[in-house]
Structures are given as structure tokens and as C-alpha cells.
Image (cartoon, rainbow over all chains, first blue to last red; front, side, top):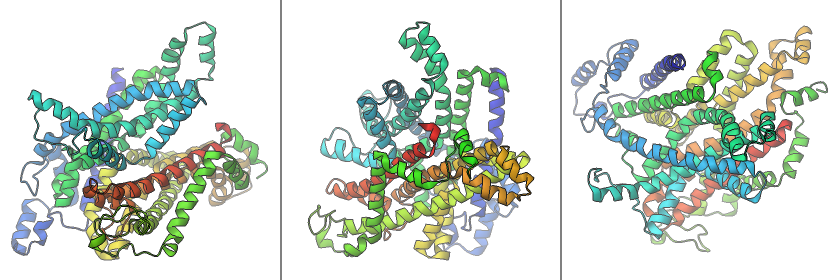
Length: 320
Length: 303
């Protein structure tokens, strides 16, 4: 298992390097000026601009710039925001926990809903309950997250007044009275993500269980007289998990798309809304860093999926 | 093609005869319904502006944020513009983006997939690594980055509307070809050592003839399904961009842009949110349903 783990870790590194090159190439190829508003400001003379360019290292050849940028990124130096003058890493560290917290809680809830519902739906195939669950799931994953978010706000905040519809970032975790408010304001954004993710997961799980049901080993287990919960929970589930993990891994980039949009709808102060705000303000260093942070997150989550794969399926561990 | 029919069933690929597939699609109730709804949406967006000749851009503040009425079936927005007219004209762009982005994605996917599947070896290895790399890119943040960096220059070069269109379509298409490439490659790999292909090789068919006459026709089924779903994905992606305020400009009322503009008026006028949102939802839902039904219809083993 340890060698498998190490191998996976090592193969993730070239992916990260390649992605960082893609992101850097996009910036380097962009015809615009990385200095943004600074370049368009008429109060700055050409000479000063040239000096700024040199001080930022923009006069050096591309490969040199790439190596310097990636080395600096590795040591946690992501440059400074053009608008707030704060280090980019500081801005990102402030906001990353919020993004991961909301995403993590939502994914946990989605998993705990999708597994029982998906398995139930597959076992009772063609029953009216299966049809209902499948239809709702199908609609759920065709419903764009931004529209769900707006509908939730309309229904639960405007009409019913149950939850606040703008996320307040001034509340602190250490204060007991604020804790309730934090939970309350997190419910809607988490709800939106849960709805979408549950729909996606449920479809994967249902399809995977349906694949396994007619297999010979299931009939054998039943013929041996094993109790039904054991056949479903141990035999079928373990085999059905493999395709589910594969599909989930392929779907990881969508996960972050959903979280970015949801943060923007509810003004959750995570890295997604920071990215959008920085784009509006033309803050290139922050935009670059966050795009790369998302790439790192996708690679890490893919790695987790790979490791899970090894845990579930011993053949994967021993094959390579 | 008589020889390849049983083979197709054996590989799980679709037959190229589109007439029986079409008939089977009609017989499926959900599939037929999805097709009808989708056709209705396309028709409305296409000829709607002729039948409903209200200007989508005329501003009049004395009729701002009116609820739906007989004069304005979908109400008006904060500038007093007619929402139905805007949905109809915006739909043209949303659908055009969906179809064009799909065409780009399918072309790229066919190219990469057939090269990898046909030639194998290091070409296959390299192209599949590239596919894996693209699959692990963070899609939306990357699209946002490209639009942020390239938006202004492209807009200046090609005009505000065409510029954004070209940019949005190529970015969305350029990030969605991977599943098609994998499908085509897998199809080619399972086909290329079969007797009918080997016979064609022995008869001296050129690589291009092999692909055109023997390999590509046999992957039409799965590619059709992927193409259908790709239109839905592209429409969603464009709506997301516009909803974030980073797609088309305010005078081009795509459905996502209408939702972006509507956010601030939700309390006073919920209809400004509901109608454009429903338009996106219905379109994507019917496209996804159609894709799902096509998958069942075109894959004889799926039943």
C-alpha cells in the first residue's frame, strides 16, 4: 500500500508542473499588459513604467520567468495584490478555509444522502419511488447552481425569511452567540451544493449498483443464504464503489465550478468570490494565484480518489 | 455495411442506420417529449421575434419591473425592457454558443481520438496524457482566467459581440473535447483488429479511407450522444460566465446575463429571475433527457 501511495504521489507531480505551465503560458501569451491599470495610467511616464517592468522581472525571457514564478510559488510567495497591497498568500489563506469548509460539509451530506437513496432506487428498479428519485435527481443535475441559489434566496430568505441571504464575514467562530448565525447563514449555500452533488452522486451509484445486481457472485451470495443487508452492504457495495470512485474523480473539476458559483451568489467570502472580485478589479497576481490554487485542489482531490481506489480494490494496489 | 451489423452489436456500438434509431427515439415517451420541447424552444427562439415584434432593447423607466401582464407576458426588467422579447433574442445567442462550442469540442475530440486510436504507440501515449491533463484542469477558473486576460484585446479586434462570441465558444469548446476523444479512441482500438478492417487494409485502403469508411461510421452512435450532452454543457457554461458578469455585455441579453442583472431586484420582482432561469433549466433538461434517451436507443446492449 505504501509503494502504491508513493507512486501515486510521484505521478501527481508532473501533472501539477504541466498545469502550472499551462496557466503560466496563458498569462505569457495574453496580449494585454500584466501591469493592468498601471500601464494605462497616463501619469506614469514610459521610463518609470520600464523601471517597474524591470523590477518585476518582466524583461527576462519566458523560461526564466516561469522557473522564478514557480519557485516563488512553492515557497509560498505568490506576490502582492495590486489593489490591497497585501501578500496574495495571506488573502488566500484567509479565505481557503471557508471554501473548503462549505464544500466539505456539503459533500459529506451529499454522500450520506446519495448512497442510501441510490442503492434503494437501484434495488427497487421501475417502482414508482425509483422513478420519483431518478426524475428528481435528473432535474437536480440539469438545474444550474446559480439558478438554484437564486430560487433558494427567493423562497427561504425573501418569502419565508428563515435565513439571511447575504453571508456576513464579520462573525467570529470563537463567539458562542455568533456560532448560531454562522450555521444559519451557511445553510443555504450548503443546500445548493448538496442538491447538485447529491443528484450527480445518486445517478452514479444507482447505475453502478444496477451493473452489479445481475452478476453471478450476487446470486451465489444469495443462494448461500446470506442475509439481504449483507449481500447489498458488503458484496454489491464494495464492487459498485469502484466505478463510482472513477466517475467522482472525473467530476472533481465540476465540484469546484459549483462552489465558485455558489460563493458568488451568496457572497460567501471564499476563494471563488475572491477570484471574481479580483477579475473585476484587474488584480492579476491574485487571479493567477487562485487559478493555480484551484488546479492544486483538483490534483489533490484526484490523488485522494486514486488512493481510495487502491483501498477499495486490492488488484489496483498489486498491479503496479 | 451488411457485414458489420452483427459486429456492431458485438462491440456495443450503434448501427449507422439512423432511421430505425429515430423511430425508436419516438417510441420512447420521455425521449419524444424532450425532442418536442427542444424543437419548440428552438422554433420560438428562431421565429419568435417575428411573431412577437416587441423590441428587446427599448428602455422606458415608467414601466420598470412590471409583473407579468397581457402587454408584457413575462413582465419587464429594471430598465422597463420587455422580458419575453429579451428571452427570445437572448436564446438565439445561448443556443448558438451551445451548438458552435459543441462543434469545436467534437472536431477536436474526433481528431485527437482517431489519431490516438488509429496510430497507437507514442502518438497514443502522448495524446492520452494530454487528455488526462485537460481532464484535471479546473475548468471554470481557467475559463475565467482566459477571458480576463484575452477579453479586451479580442473585443477590440473583432468587435464587442463577435469578439466575446468567438472567445467564449473557443474556450468552452477547447475544454470539453476530452470525453469524445476517449470514446473515439476506445472505439477505434476495439475495431481496428477486426476482420472487416483487416480485410480493407489487405485490399490496400489508405489510412484516411479506413477511417472514413470503416472506423468513423462505427463510432457515430456514442459521438452523437456526447455531442447532444455537449450542447447542454456549453449552454450551462455560457450561462455561468454571463451570470458572473464576465460573458456577454449587458446589451446582449443572454439568459445568464439576464439573471446577473436580475439579482438586485429579486425582492421587488421575482419574475425577473424566474423566467430566464426556467428558460435555461428547460433547455438543458430537455437536451440532457434527449442525450440519455439517445444513449439507450443507440446502444443495443444497454437494454
